[in-house]
Image 1 (tube, rainbow, N blue to C red):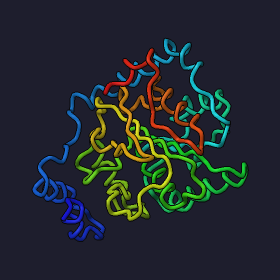
Image 2 (image 1 turned 180 degrees about the vertical axis):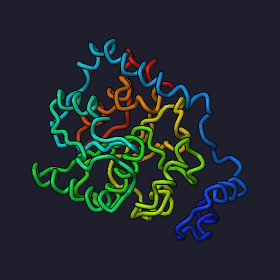
Image 3 (image 1 turned 90 degrees about the vertical axis):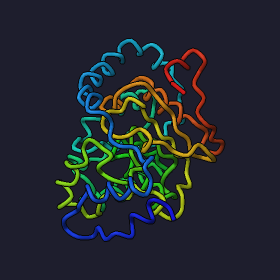
Length: 282
């Protein structure tokens, strides 16, 4: 029996959640389950995020030469306790490349509230109907978990999914540095934690191309929980940087541009250009 299956035998449908108990049980089943990033890594996140912003200036010349696609529609979803403001740099860049880019327009992301659960499928449908095309969905952190859920539930409307530091492989909120914060917000959630993040419980796999961008220096979530199985239409790509900086990290932006430029009928795994390979650690 899998780790998820064993732990899921516990009833977590009550109003109060014992996250410490859940985390302990998971570790007893599988001691290799990663814990949260170190406190030092977490505390350095704001500074490293600013470094990622500053690096955009140095990276501008080669970012402007990134692959161009066909200008199809793109929907970008923000992370926990952020709004469309947090994805402005990413959306501006993709608009410059010619894509029809849309934010989620659902305000502050406080988790899967009824507004989000009902509003996201509607937002996706509105963009797809407007352009009469499938939509690429990009999600940062928690937004990426939403994006993968949309791709799984509405594959007829989703062209591909790209996630940025999204811990869709979590088995407990205790694995993150924002787990307790998320738990405090869960009273208004329409879906119980861990927000469909335990993907082995989801049934059918994602049937569209799915790219996970992650950093081994992520100070908020364990990078291991952000990795996709590299097989078929799925892949994981490591970049250097912080969790907070992934929406404006030059390597992440290049990766997103490269993925969006893929031929919809001939998707190929990511291969960093020779001159940029040092930006993508193995």
